[in-house]
Amino acid sequence: MLLNKPIPLLFFIRNIRREALLIFLFANGVVLLKHVFGLRYLTIPIAIPTLLATCISLLLAFRTSQAYDRWWEARIVWGAIVNDSRSFIRQLQMLLPSHANRQAVLHAFVERQCAWCFVLGDSLRELDVSERLRAFLPATTADHILNSDNRPNALLLDHALAISQLYQQGQFTDYQMMQLSGVLSSLTDSMGRCERIKKTVFPRTYTFNMQVFIYLFAAILPFCFDDEIYFLDVPLVTLIASAFLLIEKSAIQLQDPFENKPTDTPVTSIARSIEVTLKTMTNHPAIPTSLPVASYYTL
Image (cartoon, rainbow, N blue to C red):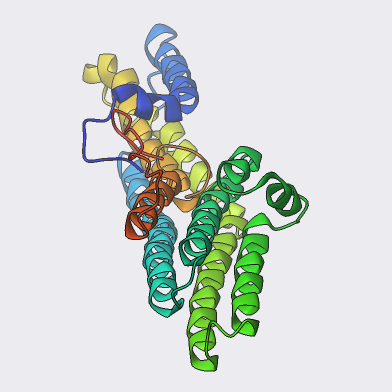
């Protein structure tokens, strides 16, 4: 997630450097045709690109809004995961009866919940989760989870089986069992919403059409400048078209919040925050520190 800090100019340039270079070369070609080879009659009324720019602006506004909605939904989901994780462990602290192994049982749930948060985020980013699992779980349990098709779901299933075992031992009443099951259902719902955002592709035709309009605008614009300011053709065309391209690229980045990029929803930082909170709540012997923040973003 981008932070409220100065963002390097290269971050923006990298996103549009190829397209901006093509537009720059094309504008140079038009200038050569008009002013070197004497083809100054190649002129188009400025009203045409003006009308096209207005249409592009409206489409970009809609596109950016829809992309931000996807990113914001992902952030809302992870906010719910934070709350449900805290509620889950707090309920276990309240409901587990006092006995010799109470703290060990509680810490086992904490480790599994922390593992679920990290594994869910890494799975959405299509990263390897084996080290995450082995950092929180016994080797045999980690190997079992790794053999599952859906690792986060397998961890929630282990939560459910552990709660069921405690219920059968008489440590939970029927009502308490329902409360804990409700929290697990809420976590499952959040997981499903993240998977839906990840797997639902933003319509490619919309992206294609938008790019066609922008390139058409960039192709027409060099023919619209007056002869007196021909020396400004290339920089002006490149800058104006690059502004549209940059907005469109920003929307593309926002629409996919789980791609391991600076514009992501900060799932790893949120997972570490959850880990610190849960382990602090349960007096865990190994409480980690918060993840270091990069100069202008956090993952």
